[in-house]
Amino acid sequence: MKFIKFSLFIISFLFINSVHAQSTQSFKELNAGIAFDGWGGWPGASFLWGQTYQNNKRIFEWQAGIAFPSLVTGKLTLAHGKFDKYSGISLRVWPLTIGPQFKINNSLTLSAELGTGEDISFSSFGILTIGFRR
Image (tube, rainbow, N blue to C red):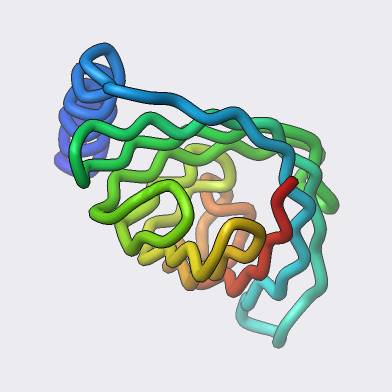
């Protein structure tokens, strides 16, 4: 229950930050990654649509789309930096994970996220991803 309350707080904070953004940028992203469960690592992929909001050096980003094997996925990120390079914390709402995300340049993102190992995290204890944006 505490995790849910904390997640709702973060989502509310991120939404408020996006309303006051100085500039925005839309994107499409192709991801590949590995999810880790009690049996080992499993490949995954996703195609996402999203938007990044920048207010000074504060970044808020949302992305959602189709995924394999979870069918759908979505993530919120709060970061520090600029459109082309930032580091931040991401909350993936499905499957539920949380962890750092880094935008290396205009087209490359990396993330390492921790899950619960339960159904809400699609049985994963963690996910490593690389994303290519356009």
